[in-house]
Length: 59
Image (tube, rainbow, N blue to C red; front, side, top):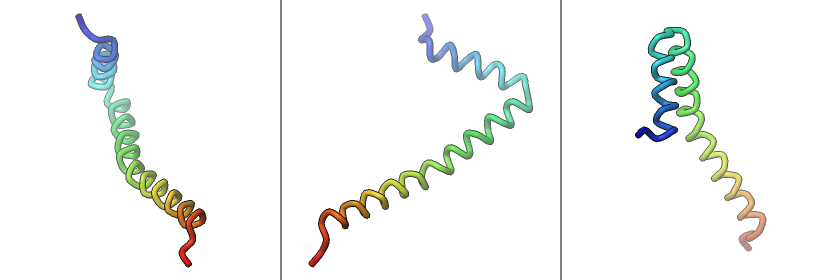
């Protein structure tokens, strides 16, 4: 018996493997997510550091 998530992934995979344009768009979205993720994490880290500096100023 397949897991529901696995079944959904297989359906998407079958669809993408048949439609070249859909596959290209999917790959573009995935690349964007992979590229954006590290920048978002760095942005969050800088924001936290900024808040910490305001809460604990150095004398």
